[in-house]
Image 1 (tube, rainbow, N blue to C red):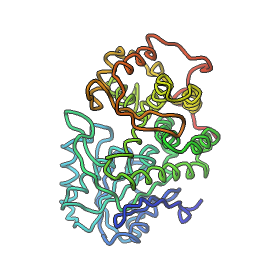
Image 2: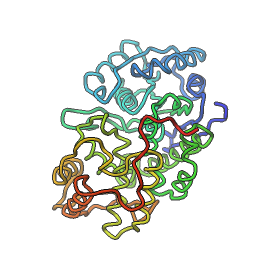
Image 3: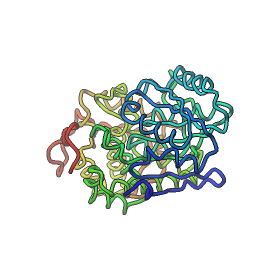
Image 4: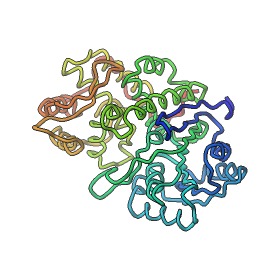
Length: 394
């Protein structure tokens, strides 16, 4: 597939609608694609040191070829970059470059850079044009689409930010070949999530085609495009997360608690891995509550295990806090009302729903049953997941 044959997915937001372009070779064509849609002739490229080393030259060449002059703001990689200090650095860099409101802020990187650059674009000059160029699978299928931007505060993750939709998203699938396999897998968890929410046929397709998605064939573009269609549909219905958009948090309640329990130590657990375990737990918990068949939970677990993702708490290296402490992390993550919690649960694969009245006592019992200190492998789960450092299927 050539860049000119990139798949286009529209995020339907009326006058603020924008395209997601998906395919290889888009990085070098960014200037041409932007010129068709935006009037600005100058841009601030916000990136991190790792992404800059791999992809900045290709982007700059494409921008200059189209007459767009880029100023580059390079930041350290990692979650700690989502801070007030680095937000100020980006804002100052944009202003120092004397960019006008009609010019463009470009995010070149993963979710951290996208969130930070988007926030800066949303507040500088009361809102500048913004283009997302996500370089991780997780960002291409999730964080680059939908307009959520922000930074962390001392009191928690993503607590300071704005909704600021991009004008264009360029998902160059070729850059994913440079990702470590563990990072690619983590993004795959978010991709598979869309099938589990409301697209059971997509999940079934992934069960058959996941190896080709990993290997980088046309199936990769097809899978990312389908995930973006799913996210675009939800965002168009519920831009500001007052209803259905909460379904996108499938797996995140358990997952965020496990991230907090590991103190956000990426050597033990990264976000996508937490989501994978969280999705498996959400399906198993739904089965325990007699909402869904245990066969569906087993099917989800089997697929996550097949692709090399963790699917149970026992897959996390090191010791975890006990079930009571894990429940404490969950109650910090979600609002509690009269002892009840909000979860995204399921009636089956592709049948996720918002449950607002889950008793904390049920969650605690479930956590105790599934805690590594009190469980072994379930029947049918033979062996452990493949090593995180192995190569992609060829």
